[in-house]
Length: 122
Image (cartoon, rainbow, N blue to C red; front, side, top):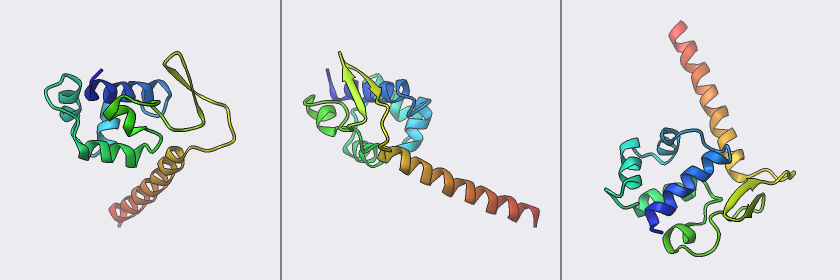
């Protein structure tokens, strides 16, 4: 399996886990164009170090060693359970770092929307 294939497998697994809905959302979160993601998917371009860096910043549960070298597990989080190559979220009281960060971004975006709506009314 190539780095591109492992990278796309991460994307598909995040969608299965409900941590991501669409390819576009993934691309937006990594600050890349959806076409760049498509280029990686169809091997027109290799996943770059910048994309991998953004991937790790946005999704700290991802094991970059797995993407680059194919070693270890896909995810480093202890709230994910792997069985026969499939991952599922464990029912645990621990909150994932990714979820906390996503919640912070949502709150910040909501505040920004409210400020913009106020400016439009003025």
